[in-house]
Image 1 (cartoon, rainbow, N blue to C red):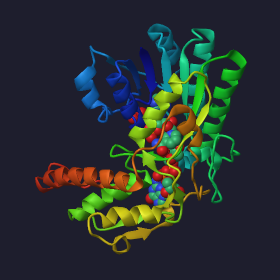
Image 2 (cartoon, rainbow, N blue to C red):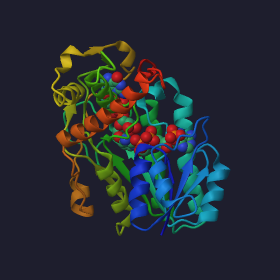
Image 3 (cartoon, helix red, strand yellow):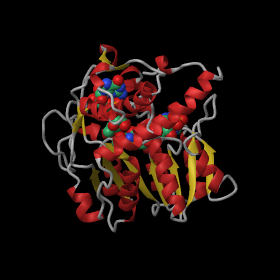
Image 4 (cartoon, rainbow, N blue to C red):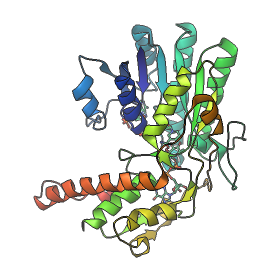
Length: 342
Ligand code: NAP
Ligand code: F7E
């Protein structure tokens, strides 16, 4: 089996590529060119499976339609997982055109390539719980109303609808995975969970004194990314294409996450966390809670990692990172960088 994974250098790209390679797939990953090599997450996979083996990488960009179409035509994959996106909600308010353009152009380019080329290629779209715009305390499922509140979410709604349209109009096996927040030790450092666990690791080792956050009352249904990429794969193996929610069915506030993370190293979060409007959004999604019943019944998927285990896993990993950082700082091999992070 051959799969193309867009966004292979991202958090989900890492876990999904690893699981597909372990399942015997040939994985073709799309990497966008940057001035520094940005394959740090997938370097272990490159060492184990590539570049002459089953893990093959290509420079491409979602905006470069011709490169994507050429790759699909040349590789003739069985499955395409479209994970690439400018995925930071707060950044999408600052870069709305880029955020919209990358998601939408990339998705339609792939769907058009399948329609005009080989209609047997299966397609996975990375849809998001942000599309619901969660306001009240209710469990959200595949039938809940979409009410996007950011350029990021609006672009995802477009991609979600186009995936459905290509499924219904052309009979393409195109699925939407509506995923609630999922995190891991390789989560981007500017998402709130990782920002917190990274700070906890640094504070624990005396490398940082304060953590500045935005809205502490927002609540999210947080799961572990490695569980969710297994769900993506199961959707692609289902007999019929459809849309599925992946979530834990539990929600926690940012405050609760911070409290649990600091508590795990014996610290009281209130002594270290301060807030600033700088990290608040022009429009906030206040409450997200998913209902994963359909995925459980039809795919046999459940989120296996608990909230407590997720926090513990991320804090432990960030303590190890802080230990390495401390050695480098003490030997003046690096300079402190956290104040530049958003
Ligand atoms: P991520 O870590 O931010 O990874 C995004 C990936 O997209 C990276 O590989 C990035 O490349 C790539 N990318 C960004 N712009 C691109 C462009 N113009 N052309 C080609 N590649 C580009 O995100 P993630 O957490 O793995 O999420 C994967 C997907 O699921 C995203 O579409 C996200 O919107 C969606 N999603 C995520 C969650 C979640 O909680 N994680 C929930 C629902 C949906 P670089 O490495 O070069 O930056
Ligand atoms: O924010 C609040 C913030 O940036 C979570 C993406 O993967 O999941 C992610 O989007 C909450 C928000 O994730 C800070 O206001 C407080 O209410 O970690 P986040 P997100 O916006 O939920 C969805 C499902 C996706 O699809 C996205 O791609 O935390 N918050 N203080 C903060 N958030 C950040 N980033 N930084 C803070 O200092």
